[in-house]
Length: 296
Image (tube, rainbow, N blue to C red; front, side, top):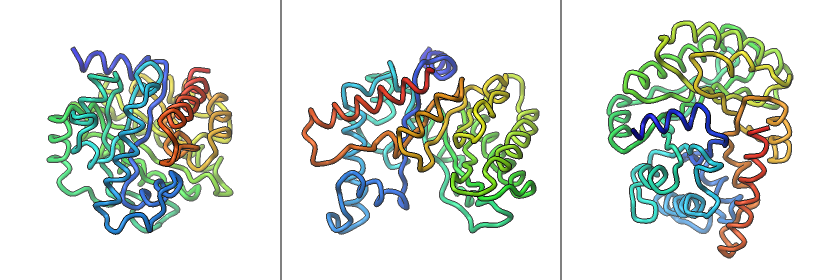
């Protein structure tokens, strides 16, 4: 029953997916923006304790519920910890009605052919089984496109769909994220190649399965409409990619059918030093703004 409810929520829910999956490389920056400088902690364990405190504060805030936040992507160490005394994924779904996903990629290879593909994911089958046992609905894996190189983009997307097949075989839904860097000069050209490449890969997805896509907000509004309408696609979500929340929301509102999956744009304006009332107010405003852009 829970799985059917979660599928329905991800297919049709009027809301967005929160990205709470900052990893080792991005955690120091996330903490710094949150008002916690690197000199505050002396070890990696302390760093992860602090970022978990931030994520817990977000997940337990009054506005963070399935009414507007339909899903949340977790870092693996978050999945392994508790939120408010309960395993994180169970807390999100059972207490908040927020569908839990797990970030599974382990970083990026060096650039080649205008892309950065994912590093190998050791013990992926074990991770997927553990995720399923922990109540995780789906996964997310990120790679990067830095140029409009057709061969590089084809290799990047093919790798994503191969990982996605393994996720689907474990009865979970993959979020496939080939991020296009927002600062590249040929962004629109890269997005045109990416659309064609994804459409080609979707032809190999069985009719009874669906994937999700997490894509950079495109230069041309409505560019990804064929993916939004595709029967093999459960949902198309957008990353903020370095845009401010205001610009990300404006771009998102121009792309009917896409919903947000923001990380930095969601936490913009939040600070460890805020009182609970200040923090909850700032987060509530962010959620309202991102939700409005997602349902436009």
